[in-house]
Length: 490
Image 1 (tube, rainbow, N blue to C red):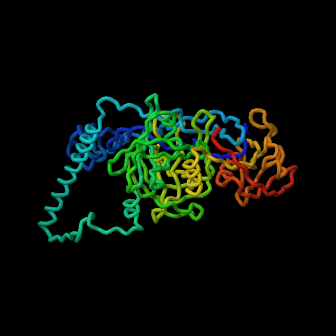
Image 2 (spheres, rainbow, N blue to C red; image 1 turned 30 degrees about the vertical axis):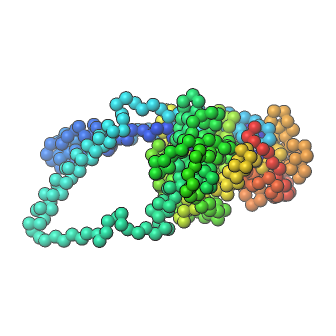
Image 3 (cartoon, one colour; image 1 turned 120 degrees about the vertical axis):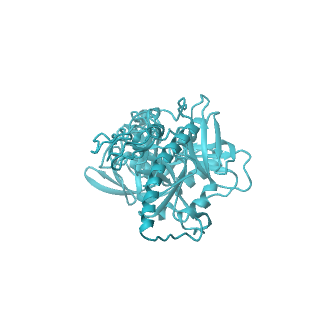
C-alpha cells in the first residue's frame, strides 16, 4: 500500500485509532448508578436501617425500597460496555502526488444526527433529573437538619459567610474563567446539513474581522455541495454561512458568515512551536451538542503522528498533532485549543476512541487522549483557502509505503496508479533518492513510517529546505531536499 509524498501514523492505541470529533444530537442523560433519572425518582424511600443509595433511608447498600442489612453484590450494576463511536477505516488506497490513503481507522461513514426517540424530549429529561435530585436532596436535607438540631442543643455553632457572591468576584485575565470569558464570544457552534438531510454539529472560531471562521474539514464536508450551514454565537445570534475552502488532507476548512456583524473579535493566534509539554490548555466546543463548553488540561505530548480516515480508505487526514488531556468529545471538532493566556495554539480535531463501530451505533467519550492541529500549520492553510479556495501541500515527489512500520518510510518500487515511484525531475529525484531507500529522519524528527513522514512534510511549506536521512544497502546517508508543491486534494 503506498501514497506519494505525505501523512502520519496512528499513535499507539488502546484498541482503535483516533477519530475526528463531530457530534450528533446530545444523547439523553442518565441518572445515578446508570439508571434513568425517572426510575430513580419513582423508587421512593426504603425501609428503616443503615445508609443506602439515594432514595433510601434504610438498609446498608440495599436497593431503594429495600431494608437489606447486607450489601447487595449486584448493586450498582456494572457500567455498560464501551460503545463504538466511529467506523473502521477501509483499506488504504494509493494516490498519485501525495494523496491520502490510510486504512487504520476512522471517522465513520457519516456524520448523521439521529432523530430523537419518542418520549425523550428535553423538558421531560429536565423534570426527571430535577425529581431525582430533589429526592436525594430532600433526604439529605432532612438528616442534616436533625443532626444540626441535636448538635445545637448541646453546644453553640458559628457560621461564616462570604463577603461577596461568586458573581461579584473579579477574575484575573490569566485564570480559566478570565480566558473563557474573553474567548467564548469569538467561538461558534456550527451545524452542517447535507442535501440528503444528514447533519452534524461542530465548532469554529473567528479568524478575522471579515467574518471568516476556521473549523475542521470533516465538520463542514457534508455542506460543501449545496448543503446548509449555520454558525451560532454564545449570545444566541445565528448566521447562515458558506464554505470558502476546505483541505481534506489537513482537515482544515474556512467558512464565511453571511451578513457578518461589524463587531467581530478574532481570537489571538499563538505559536504552536513554542508550546511545551505540561503547558496548561483550555478547549472550547460543543461536545454532544452542548454548545459553549469549556474544559481544561495540559499539553501531554507534541509532534504526535496521527492519521484519521473517513472509513472508506480513500480519504485520510494527517497531522503532527498536539496531544492534550483536556476533555474533548464529539462536537469539539474545529474548536480552539487555547493556552493559559487565551491564545489559540491548535484546532481540536480527533480523539482516541475505544470503539470500532459505525457512527450511529454509539458514542465514545473522552479518555484523555485528544489531538489538535498545530495553529502554525492551520493558519497557513486557512490563509491559502481564503486567497484561492484550494489547499497547497508540500511534497517530496516520491511514493512511500503506508504499511505499519517502526523502521522508517520506504520508497516503494511502484508508484500509485502505475506512476513512477520517484517523480521524474521532482524534489526526491533531484536529491538522488531511489526506490527502496528508507527515510528515517526529516531534519531532527525521527520517521518511523510513511504516514509519519507525510505528517511532518505537511508541517512545512513548499520551497522549504529540509534534511533527509535515509538508509540504502545498510548504509546511512543524508541529503538536502527542497520541497515541491501540490495544489488541491485530488
